[in-house]
Image 1 (tube, rainbow, N blue to C red):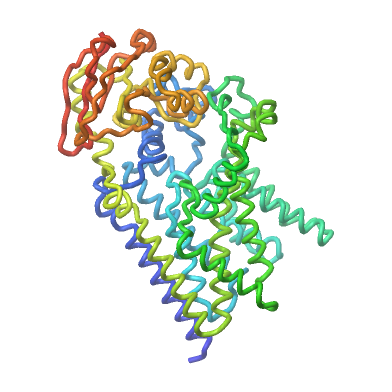
Image 2: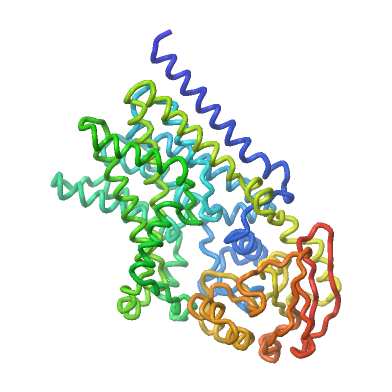
Length: 563
């Protein structure tokens, strides 16, 4: 048996082993079902409920001016994104937790395959370096990405593989299929806008350096960008043609001084960001610095220039992220509202592919230096994989953070009891929540005046503010949070602060609530679901009707009616 054959067999074994490990990673979600523990922030508290509300509204293909009456008396359909998103259809076709598990599976398998293809074709070509290729690809696929982002960042390697192949002229139909399919399972504004801008700079670099247009490469860029714009037609309409002001127009993001921005850039470089968790601090970063030191002492090492470029790009992206919130931008953002409504700081999302490409190259460079260095590279890859396995959602949220399970969070049986106790059709009254996310009520079919959404009418923000004005006056942090951001259109309470989840084992009480319940009633509000007792309910024209508890719920709900 030839050396090449043995190498291919080894690589196949590594790939199969990686896929088995990925399968084991997914297993808790499929086995536990709704008893599984998954991320709450920007997941259970929002997106999963949005998909269910949209699916049940019958408005997946609603018109450009259609609304979803279940949320804020008519949330514009555009707030829920395009009908051509794969994740929306998963949630339309399957129960929420099943759809979530399937989405995780699709995303991580595509991430593994994309990174493997990219490394093997363009960066780690040596036949014997199969463990580096497969190991780094597996590590990339295990990163705890933001779930509703799908392939918005984890799809970067597959797209880069396709673009680099087309750029070099070595391509077939497969690259075009990849570029065609990715927009249906990713977001333009939450990932690929920034990636396509970066690829455009690569095309411009080639044009300047090589003095040729490279038409297939240019067309591939135009093709993918145009496809995104067609798929995201609602986004294009709302940003370019819609005349209705939305709450994002009042975003104030630039408030940091120079040193605050410097500290934030260092934090981003060392730790990362919640929506693109790279988990690179303890293993990857030391390896990158070690490799940088070795490159400084050795002249002729393959991939030296690209590694240094990626390292500097990594630093630059962290600086860009932090300084987007610097007060130097204030004059420009005041003149150009688009700079407020669109978050250009998200160029730092590119760091996930930059960091893992750098890690792959670093391990490959170490691997090429000899036996001891090869062992170090192997240890580094295995250590990173183990570190990422510890970020499995069941471990992270079930055992470390003790978050509610999917079933405990949405508490469908408990809210079914509330619905039956009220007795009236759910579309005949409006509710709001205190101490729990409104997404829970929305998931259970209630019509809510409160919500958490990326886009909603500015006029509604003003109306809702009248309900909570006195509570905001008591608390500068909450006032700033609502007035300068406001995507969480919640009934904020000074005594509770920016905490949205009070479970039934907590003994918190509200003693000095001041709500404008007349405004609440005027907007259609009749009931308040509170996870904490309101001791001065009568002062707010609220009457406690009943307490609801359920063994499968994380909450004890106090049902108040506006008198």
